[in-house]
Image (spheres, rainbow, N blue to C red):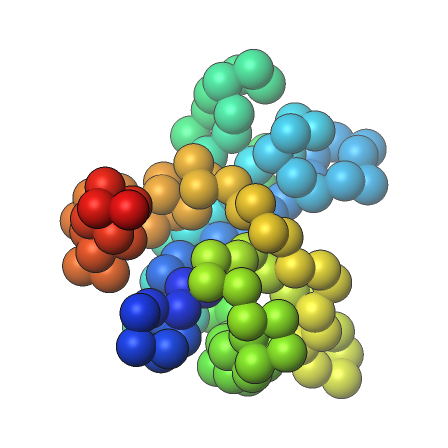
Length: 146
């Protein structure tokens, strides 16, 4: 999940995606050959298409290549609680722009880590294009005017 604190001090969830490993890899990140699928922030469901980095083939996937699990419409368990946890975590690490790795455990959402340099590239694609995001336009404008 990627959060942003605006000039007024309000925290916003900009984008979210779920990462998947492939094959026998225990690592789930795109830099190790895995892929990611955007999450609809309104419904907490996976988008239809997953994306893999070009250096690993650049595939667009509608199902996991190892088990044919179809992404589109799958509801992330406890998504609202994961969002609440993420937004609360910003109170403790009030970085204006941060990426959060959240796991859904048997007892609820758990923060794995916070990333001060999140992958804007993946978040942009997961959202469906940050240039269409109303808050991101303000972020870019703020950067241009600094």
